Amino acid sequence: MFISSMGRRARLVLVGAVAALTLAIPATVSADTTGGVPSIQPAFSRDATIQRTGVRVTAKVITTVTIAFTCQPFQSYNWETGETTETTVGRIEGGQVTIIQAQGRTIDWGQGDLFGGTATCDGATVNALSVPVTAAVSPWKVGTAVVGATVMLSDEFGSDSDYASSGPVTVRLTSR
Image (tube, rainbow, N blue to C red; front, side, top):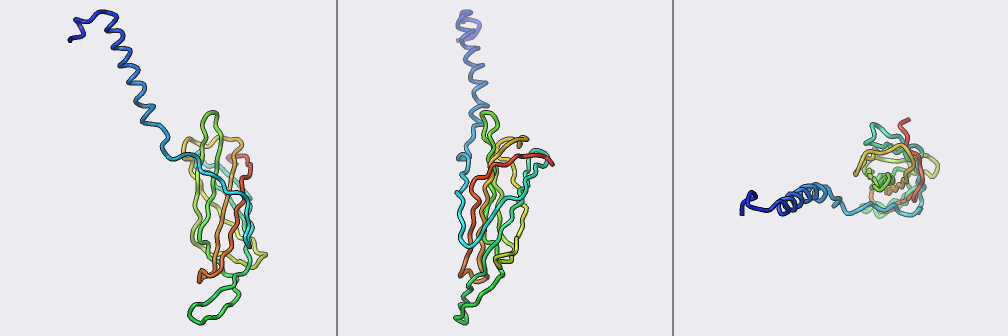
């Protein structure tokens, strides 16, 4: 059937259906399929402490979160000699910084990972790291957000470990 042989009403219905379909396609293509907003672990400490000391937004897409943590000396077991010794040299085995920000009807979030490097674990030395966190959904906005950070450390043989989680902490995102 040619469009020219259709009645005026049928043509309007057909054009309307095509327009609705055209508008619906981009909405389904850009749907969020990432699995949702990540959670922030509750505050917890096993021989370590952690806190957020600074948050700074750069060009609306990267937030640099500075964290500070302390850890206790490790009881390091040497598998070759069978001896246990105390050591203050820690390795950063993992960790993460998560930011969640409500932006109207959208929830933006981002995560930055920690891995590698050393730390002094003597119970008093404050170790500091800056972690870049990229916005996953839309650019960061100036305003409030929630930040959570975790860190896991171990001795060189992996026989003893320390862990800390900050829990959710409310912060103000600024560009300064």
